[in-house]
Image (cartoon, rainbow, N blue to C red; front, top):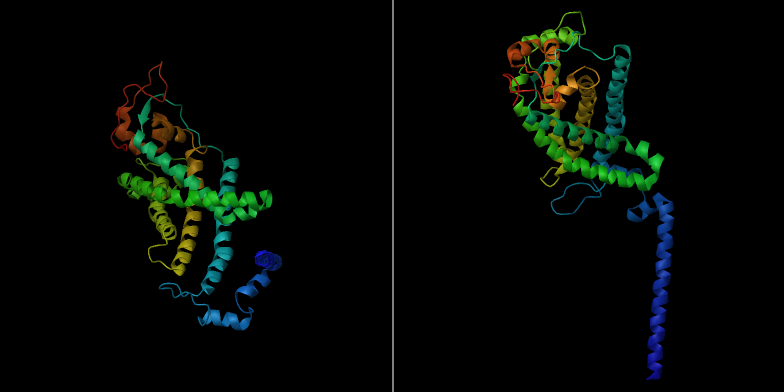
Length: 350
């Protein structure tokens, strides 16, 4: 009995020793492969040579055998997508966004802010209701977050990875993807709402062409007549209604890959999404500049809802003629953000 127990104990020790040696051998092999990526690849598939790539491109090998799948495990279209992204999409973004930022800076340094030509009267006109402003700032905030996270997804590894290292960069990218993927559909819903709400105010007319010919008042000394929305504002609206909706649709294709779309479809959706979003971001920089530091009185209209009579007369003279009887004077003891007896004038979005 004693001999039998001793044999069992010896057997267990030998088994543990064998397992330990096997683990050490496997660990050494894994480390060797980690140091040499080609070594890892060689253990997964046969030696990678010209014949293997010929088989991949012709669809003769590496077929994914999972349920209802006809894709190659090694898919040449992925390399095509990578080349388009690297050679066309990324340079386009740098040219569009970076070029627009540079143009705005040069314009501001040379021309400066467009100030009001006449003194303010102190009388206010309601231009944007509380609902309109809430929609605008919600969509604008989401747009900025999506633009920043999108730029990070496209260029972040070239900027933040060298600065902070792999660990910080990986965490940043993980958070970026979550924000971008979850906020995108919400932005799409709110954009459709705001487009529907302001549709009537953005129907093009012949005066818009005159606005463009005079560069919104920058060409010549004459004021350019405009209704509630001028030609530039309408152009931004219709860009959002076309390219914006295309960006949303292509984003949803990538956000929800469980509706039957294949990898090829998602790759093309990614290209369309990136190009459209980069173009919108570039134009949005101009929109933000004009609505903030570029034009006196523009930001306070969207911040408080009210604009001065002088601003309305100089920038939207036809709208001013429709609503000038609705102008109100703030009470001396009240903030100018809350004019006395303010009511919503005709032609103002509710």
